[in-house]
Image (cartoon, rainbow, N blue to C red; front, side, top):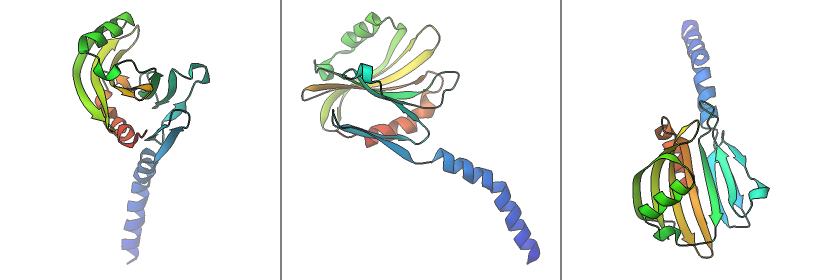
Length: 175
Protein backbone atom coordinates (compact mmCIF):
# COMPACT_ATOMS: atom_id res chain seq x y z
CA UNK A 1 0.00 0.00 0.00
CA UNK A 2 2.84 2.36 0.90
CA UNK A 3 4.60 1.59 -2.41
CA UNK A 4 1.39 2.29 -4.36
CA UNK A 5 1.05 5.68 -2.64
CA UNK A 6 4.68 6.48 -3.51
CA UNK A 7 4.11 5.55 -7.15
CA UNK A 8 1.06 7.80 -7.30
CA UNK A 9 3.00 10.71 -5.77
CA UNK A 10 5.85 10.24 -8.26
CA UNK A 11 3.36 10.06 -11.12
CA UNK A 12 1.65 13.24 -9.93
CA UNK A 13 5.00 15.01 -9.57
CA UNK A 14 5.97 14.00 -13.10
CA UNK A 15 2.62 15.14 -14.50
CA UNK A 16 2.44 18.42 -12.60
CA UNK A 17 4.38 20.39 -15.23
CA UNK A 18 2.04 19.00 -17.88
CA UNK A 19 -1.02 20.10 -15.88
CA UNK A 20 0.49 23.53 -15.29
CA UNK A 21 1.31 23.92 -18.96
CA UNK A 22 -2.13 22.69 -20.02
CA UNK A 23 -3.75 25.14 -17.62
CA UNK A 24 -1.67 27.97 -19.06
CA UNK A 25 -2.30 26.94 -22.67
CA UNK A 26 -6.03 26.58 -22.05
CA UNK A 27 -6.28 29.50 -19.65
CA UNK A 28 -9.60 30.41 -21.15
CA UNK A 29 -10.22 33.43 -23.19
CA UNK A 30 -10.67 37.13 -22.95
CA UNK A 31 -13.68 38.95 -24.36
CA UNK A 32 -13.30 42.12 -26.40
CA UNK A 33 -16.39 44.33 -26.66
CA UNK A 34 -16.60 47.45 -28.77
CA UNK A 35 -19.62 49.38 -27.51
CA UNK A 36 -19.28 52.12 -30.12
CA UNK A 37 -19.35 49.82 -33.16
CA UNK A 38 -21.33 47.01 -31.56
CA UNK A 39 -19.14 43.96 -32.06
CA UNK A 40 -17.38 41.54 -29.76
CA UNK A 41 -15.22 38.43 -29.88
CA UNK A 42 -13.25 36.08 -27.66
CA UNK A 43 -9.51 35.66 -28.04
CA UNK A 44 -7.02 33.30 -26.39
CA UNK A 45 -6.26 34.08 -22.75
CA UNK A 46 -2.54 34.41 -23.36
CA UNK A 47 -2.94 36.91 -26.21
CA UNK A 48 -2.62 40.65 -25.64
CA UNK A 49 -5.07 43.35 -26.66
CA UNK A 50 -4.17 46.72 -28.06
CA UNK A 51 -6.52 49.45 -29.12
CA UNK A 52 -5.13 52.66 -30.54
CA UNK A 53 -7.40 55.60 -29.78
CA UNK A 54 -5.49 57.68 -32.34
CA UNK A 55 -6.62 55.26 -35.04
CA UNK A 56 -10.23 55.10 -33.81
CA UNK A 57 -12.54 54.97 -36.78
CA UNK A 58 -9.96 53.03 -38.75
CA UNK A 59 -8.44 50.30 -36.61
CA UNK A 60 -10.67 49.34 -33.77
CA UNK A 61 -8.57 46.65 -32.12
CA UNK A 62 -5.76 44.20 -32.58
CA UNK A 63 -5.12 41.14 -30.43
CA UNK A 64 -1.87 39.27 -30.76
CA UNK A 65 -0.01 36.18 -29.65
CA UNK A 66 3.41 36.04 -28.09
CA UNK A 67 5.96 36.78 -30.85
CA UNK A 68 7.65 33.93 -32.68
CA UNK A 69 10.77 34.95 -34.62
CA UNK A 70 9.99 38.55 -33.56
CA UNK A 71 6.58 38.46 -35.28
CA UNK A 72 3.28 38.26 -33.38
CA UNK A 73 0.40 36.42 -35.05
CA UNK A 74 -2.65 38.61 -34.69
CA UNK A 75 -6.30 39.35 -35.37
CA UNK A 76 -7.45 42.85 -36.18
CA UNK A 77 -10.66 44.64 -37.02
CA UNK A 78 -10.41 47.48 -39.50
CA UNK A 79 -13.42 49.79 -39.77
CA UNK A 80 -14.34 51.77 -42.86
CA UNK A 81 -17.30 53.26 -44.61
CA UNK A 82 -19.02 50.49 -46.54
CA UNK A 83 -17.94 50.71 -50.13
CA UNK A 84 -18.76 47.40 -51.71
CA UNK A 85 -16.28 45.32 -49.72
CA UNK A 86 -18.42 42.21 -50.09
CA UNK A 87 -18.74 42.68 -53.84
CA UNK A 88 -15.05 43.21 -54.60
CA UNK A 89 -13.41 40.98 -57.18
CA UNK A 90 -10.11 39.18 -56.81
CA UNK A 91 -8.58 41.56 -59.36
CA UNK A 92 -9.77 44.64 -57.42
CA UNK A 93 -8.33 43.23 -54.21
CA UNK A 94 -5.02 42.37 -55.86
CA UNK A 95 -4.77 45.92 -57.21
CA UNK A 96 -5.49 47.34 -53.76
CA UNK A 97 -2.87 45.12 -52.17
CA UNK A 98 -0.32 46.06 -54.84
CA UNK A 99 -1.06 49.75 -54.25
CA UNK A 100 -0.19 49.09 -50.60
CA UNK A 101 3.26 47.97 -51.76
CA UNK A 102 2.91 44.38 -50.61
CA UNK A 103 5.76 42.72 -52.48
CA UNK A 104 5.63 39.14 -53.74
CA UNK A 105 1.82 39.22 -53.35
CA UNK A 106 -0.08 36.07 -54.22
CA UNK A 107 -3.78 35.48 -53.65
CA UNK A 108 -4.08 31.88 -52.47
CA UNK A 109 -7.87 31.68 -52.42
CA UNK A 110 -10.86 33.93 -52.98
CA UNK A 111 -14.48 33.13 -52.27
CA UNK A 112 -17.81 34.75 -51.59
CA UNK A 113 -19.43 33.61 -48.37
CA UNK A 114 -21.86 34.54 -45.61
CA UNK A 115 -20.50 35.60 -42.20
CA UNK A 116 -23.06 36.06 -39.42
CA UNK A 117 -25.81 36.56 -41.96
CA UNK A 118 -23.85 39.14 -43.96
CA UNK A 119 -22.46 38.69 -47.46
CA UNK A 120 -18.68 38.80 -47.43
CA UNK A 121 -15.55 38.06 -49.39
CA UNK A 122 -12.97 35.76 -47.82
CA UNK A 123 -9.49 36.02 -49.28
CA UNK A 124 -6.30 34.20 -48.30
CA UNK A 125 -3.05 35.69 -49.53
CA UNK A 126 0.63 35.86 -48.81
CA UNK A 127 3.15 38.62 -49.24
CA UNK A 128 6.55 39.78 -48.09
CA UNK A 129 7.51 42.96 -46.34
CA UNK A 130 11.08 44.07 -45.72
CA UNK A 131 11.59 41.46 -43.00
CA UNK A 132 8.78 38.91 -42.89
CA UNK A 133 7.00 36.47 -45.17
CA UNK A 134 3.38 37.00 -44.12
CA UNK A 135 0.16 35.13 -44.70
CA UNK A 136 -3.25 36.67 -44.09
CA UNK A 137 -6.92 35.77 -44.29
CA UNK A 138 -9.39 38.61 -44.58
CA UNK A 139 -13.16 38.71 -44.21
CA UNK A 140 -14.48 41.80 -46.02
CA UNK A 141 -17.98 42.66 -44.84
CA UNK A 142 -20.38 45.54 -45.45
CA UNK A 143 -22.92 45.72 -42.65
CA UNK A 144 -25.34 48.59 -42.71
CA UNK A 145 -23.39 51.83 -42.52
CA UNK A 146 -20.14 50.16 -41.46
CA UNK A 147 -17.48 48.23 -43.37
CA UNK A 148 -15.51 45.60 -41.48
CA UNK A 149 -12.25 43.97 -42.49
CA UNK A 150 -11.42 41.10 -40.14
CA UNK A 151 -7.79 40.12 -40.66
CA UNK A 152 -5.99 37.03 -39.38
CA UNK A 153 -2.21 37.34 -39.74
CA UNK A 154 0.76 35.06 -39.10
CA UNK A 155 4.04 34.14 -40.71
CA UNK A 156 3.74 31.96 -43.80
CA UNK A 157 5.73 29.32 -41.94
CA UNK A 158 3.34 29.07 -38.96
CA UNK A 159 -0.08 30.25 -40.16
CA UNK A 160 -1.50 26.72 -39.87
CA UNK A 161 -0.45 26.54 -36.22
CA UNK A 162 -2.79 29.46 -35.44
CA UNK A 163 -5.81 28.08 -37.31
CA UNK A 164 -7.45 26.88 -34.06
CA UNK A 165 -7.07 30.29 -32.40
CA UNK A 166 -8.30 32.06 -35.53
CA UNK A 167 -11.30 29.73 -35.78
CA UNK A 168 -12.14 30.38 -32.12
CA UNK A 169 -12.03 34.13 -32.65
CA UNK A 170 -14.24 33.97 -35.74
CA UNK A 171 -16.69 31.51 -34.13
CA UNK A 172 -17.14 33.88 -31.18
CA UNK A 173 -17.40 37.08 -33.23
CA UNK A 174 -20.74 38.84 -32.88
CA UNK A 175 -22.24 42.05 -34.20
